[in-house]
Length: 76
Picture 1 (cartoon, rainbow, N blue to C red):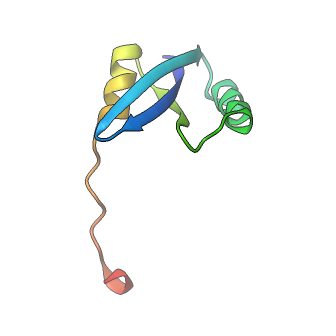
Picture 2: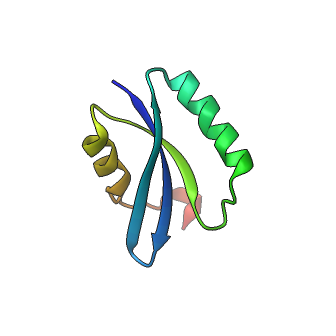
Picture 3: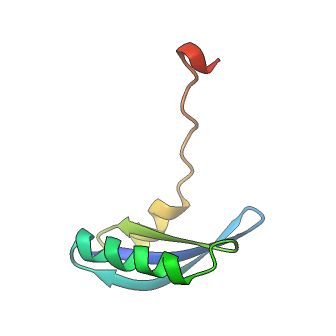
């Protein structure tokens, strides 16, 4: 399954996902994403690597809202 690199911009609650490229191996995708982050102004967007069977699954993973971690112990 491929690794996709996306540029994510957020305007209010809406995320704009732009697929930049895809790689077969995580190592290659990670290296390319790190290089893109060096040359891109990250104040307006972020570059993220995501894994998925296809583009639809990758975009669903990027749009999934994760619940906040519970506060425990000294975090109170």
